[in-house]
Every structure is written in structure tokens, then in C-alpha cells.
Image (cartoon, rainbow, N blue to C red):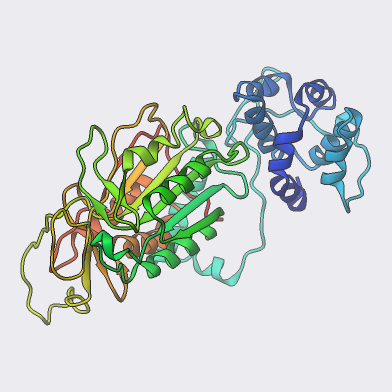
Length: 428
């Protein structure tokens, strides 16, 4: 399928998923050779009608150059002229015959399938013009070459594995970033200087990863919960995942599976368990079976891990000191610019969920007023370097390892997850 045709399907996916009359399409799609009967059976097992429509559009992109005009023609034939006009606006193509498209069954990520009792071949990847930078990556022994090789291997794995979450829609999902910086005097919580740097980094990074980024700043606890609930109630049928990022103070809280709570600007807090529960399979129907990711930059408590003292001229500590703060909400009055904890609690129907914490439960999370938090600064850099070739859990391990080795003070990020598959960000 031509790139422009794929883009039309992707840009119009929300409207198509909502508007397609699927029952009228099944027969003509088989008759005209767009799909085999077995392939349609797989699509129909995708779930609800909207899930089926979404899978149909994803698989349609793999069906060759005549699939798009044939599909548009079938829409007209079945009385769905408004959708046909929507897709074909500005295009001119003839009605293809059924022999133009040969049913070749492929797996949902491009793997081998069976058509007519014979093994079908992998579909070839499109060949793009090579740039001078591409040629530089050919030289072995360089970091760039190693990352390129790893990225190519990851691409093959993603395309051919049933153990990888499918991310193909544009945008791939919503990303809500809540950035609490200014807190009311009554809250007893300090200004979170440096958090705006974290906010800008993550907003840019996840926009590059094809998320539709929604941002909110300085929300009270009830306002935070309202925004989270509104996101959970959106129609995610045409999306592949959902991401929530919260940058705030936090407090320690008793828990069953996930520790902690996150503070609003009024000093009131929301348990992380309550945040996650907004998006579980009972409350957010259209995200069932899709990854739901949560990134929490806040403290897990007030305990500080000082590690060991270093000389003032030690290379690892330069730039810290007076500008270093924690992201904890104090349980009792404290001096200085202390702003600490965050976490999560138990979740019913906890499948396809990952919660990433900036620090170990019970401990503070450090933030520099000049450069932002240790965790977010490291996360953004690791994503830039390795997201092309590594899955999310390996990326978070890299972040944890690097943050844990910072000097002067210690911090140990971690995550709780109930994922069923590998998750790779959409970086291209």
C-alpha cells in the first residue's frame, strides 16, 4: 500500500472505527480477495465491533497496493459513501479486479501464516533511500553501528512476535502529563523548582513517540482525579495504549500491591491505587487488553539514603548541593525546601498495567532546582538513546541502574507491572 494511502487510513482511524458497518463488508472483502476467510475470522475474534474495525484497518495496510482502492470501492458498494468519499478525497484510481489482490495470510505483526494450505512468506519491508548518515552506521565497532544492529533486530522481533503489544495507530494513544509546581500555603508543601524542566522534556519525548499529549498544571487533588477520570472515559478504541505522567509531591501510604499517594496543590492526596483503578478493565472498557502505563515522579516516603560522603571536588557531585531537593510531602513539619513521596495501591483486573516509580517505597526522590529530577532527566536520556531497540522494562532497568549510582545521596527507582507482553515505544 502506498504511504499516502496508509496515512489516510491512520488519520481517519477514529472516524472509521466509529462509522464502519462491518457486517456489510465481510463478504465483499473475501470476494474481491482483500482478505481470506481465515484472516477475517481472526479479525472477528479481536473483540467488540470497534476492536474488530480497528484490527481490520491495521491489517488492511499490509494487503498490497490495490487494497486501498478496493476497500474504498467496497464502501461505496455497501452504502457507506460518506466514508468512501472521506478516504478518496483528492484520489483517482480505477476499480481493480479480484485478481489484482492475492490473499496472503500474515500474522498481526507480519509473521508467517497459512493461505490455501500453503505457508505464506513474510511481506517485504519497504526500501527507503539511504542517507549519508545511514552509510556511517554501517561501520562496525562504533556505538552507532551497535545501536543500529540492535534496532534492526528489535524491529524484526516486534514485527514477528505475538508477545509484543501492537502499536500502529497514529496517535498511538493519549499521554496525560500533570505537573504540580506551586502549592498553597495551607498545604505546607514547597515550590517544586525544576519540575518544569521535567515537564518540557517528557512532553517533547512522548510527542516524538506519537502520543497525543495532554497537559495540566497545578491541580488540586479533586481536579487531578477529575482529569484522570475524564481521560479514562474517553473512547480509546482507535488507540493502542495510554500513558499517565504525574510530577508532584507524594506521601507514604499503606498498600496491598502498590505503595504511596500523590499530592494535589491543596495538600490533599490521591492514592496511586485509585489512579490506576480509573483505567482498569471495569472502568475503561476501550483500553481492555492494551497497555496502560503510569510514571510517577514523587517520593515514596521521607527516609533518605545518604550513601557515603564524597569530597567536594568529586566529579559525580558537582552541580548538586544547595540546589538539590526531594519530592516528598512531609508527614511532620520540616525545614528547608522538602517536597516528598508518591506511590500506588491494589488494583482489581490489573492486567496490562505498569507503574514506574522514581524511588523505592519509603524513600525520598531527589530533584535539582536547576536541572530537574534525577529520575526524569535520566529517563529522557535513556529513551533517546535506546528506545529504538529496547523494550520498556529494559529501558527502566537502565534508568534504575544509572540513578542508583549517582553520588552524594542515593535513590532507587523501580516499577510494578502486570504486563502480558513486551512494550516498545513507537519511535519512527
